[in-house]
Image 1 (cartoon, rainbow, N blue to C red):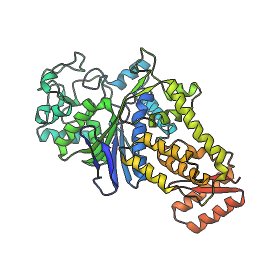
Image 2: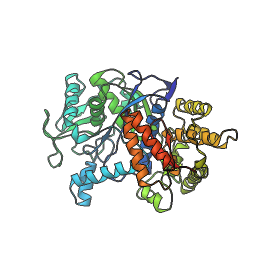
Image 3: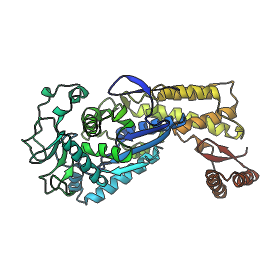
Image 4: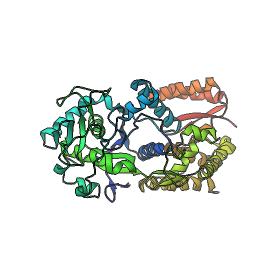
Length: 461
């Protein structure tokens, strides 16, 4: 088995995890100063489908994500004011309320899009000690220096910096006039902030060896990766808009601090356009999932739409394309509803189509190809209906389009309770007791469908 992944900083190369069958994955999380929109969601759907794909072919996942609640200024560089403090002032509520509101919305939204929550979640404000530790390492090694307003990373000491951003440093002399505190003592215009001082009105501040202040935006991800996953990881995901700003700086500071490769594979998703243009408040084209839902769409149609294009390319969202995605998804749901009672408990996924599905996973997580294989199963007139159903459900371990819900129609609460009890017994490997509950469920007119990582019941036809 050879998995090919398209590294955004190099050519496609074979994927080999650092630790045998375990894959360490980090995803850039949200800055919780606003509601995440459908453009943001593409990054989390990519991360989710990547992890589920690797799990499907036998890898164990060790994953982490940040929640930015301090230090991200109103541009992606070192200019402007802190995004959360600005939002707090605009809405005239405490910064903690801002953080709680938008963090909770983020969790609720990704859950509704069937994005499994990352196992290790850290707010930037929870890892200040680790961030300070990293800055001290960089300073000791000569990559960081103190100025009148904070601590900066010296890009001239990291020889690959210009190559990473595909531009020469001499072409990047422009400095914003809106810097939080203008710093004329920086060595290079592109040196980026690791720690901000000389900003006493900032609400969230901590003591440090360089003075009271708060971290820069870029250091948090490097510190969280170090804390949660170690010095080097297998895969780092995020939006392509972060590649030449945030991610280049992550590479510079992490490689300088710890050496090694830092990240073996950088996986970036393409941007989402709306009717051919970028999302903006002025165009009133920034949509949340509730906006989609209010127009009568199943929000998982958006997930299907994103899966129908390769993650690496830009995608143009229109309500016409969303309608086409929903129509396709509904055809699958209807196929399941019409045929669900033909499912036989001894059915197993079709091996030929499983291999085709795995081929698409190994081919740079080719989700359009995965959907083609799915439709091939549905349209194959030589396949037994029951075999089709279990194969579709098996693929949904990766696709997460809620196919099982169209088996689970009008299941009584007592049956669901028995199933939950059986699932606990199975997880504890109490096979005899779990089989007894299975027999009780069968006697009540229902049968169990066991997949590799879940079980559910359907009514006997």
